[in-house]
Image (cartoon, rainbow, N blue to C red):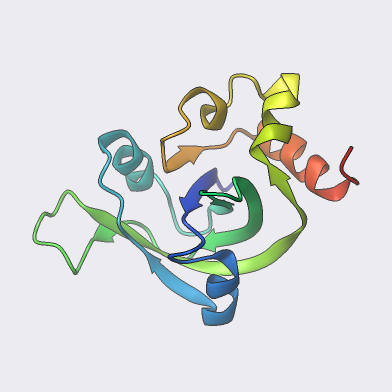
Length: 139
């Protein structure tokens, strides 16, 4: 069973719409040690929730890792890795950080506990809750 991840992106720099337009991209720019540790564990076929930071602060789309991690070809440091990411689909509606914080079952989610982390695992249970929120009308 593929693992599930949340990857953050600044939509002013590279949005989910950009990924959908491009079809596929190299996901790079990760330098935080814990985020890099998580990125090194992403495998081809893993599912990804793309989250917009900044003003939007919401999960907005689904993607798939189409490569295992490999050294960033733009960097001289072999510890800095990237993955190839392919767009799947936009969520039916964005799931905001405020909504996630209001959902008691997500109180221990890394997005709530460590809000600056840019790559994080998503448990199957958390994934299902977030997909459920994306499918329902906002309250």
